[in-house]
Length: 114
Image 1 (spheres, rainbow, N blue to C red):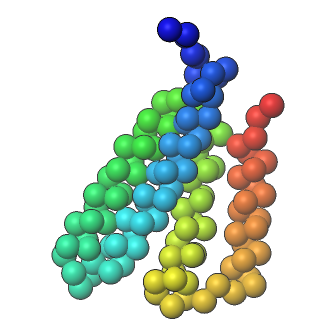
Image 2 (tube, rainbow, N blue to C red; image 1 turned 90 degrees about the vertical axis):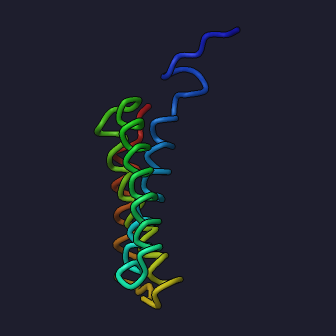
């Protein structure tokens, strides 16, 4: 069986992907919390999603540099913006779109390593 190290093998970007999953779970948990103020089942689902997001974040931070992994958490802002539009009727405006573009540029610049 071939030995695979974290940085050079198949797991080179695992920490980054785990943080992306964490961002989606966190935003999803917050959406369910928004709905949960009138529905305890949704509140519970929100806690499960948020808790799983925390577990994925902890694992990500164990595998990746903080300065590389943590900026990826801002993907949750993008997901929340889309969730707001799709599920809550909050329109995506040009101003919000430009903010997301700037976030994306910032994340790319801070997360990219040669």
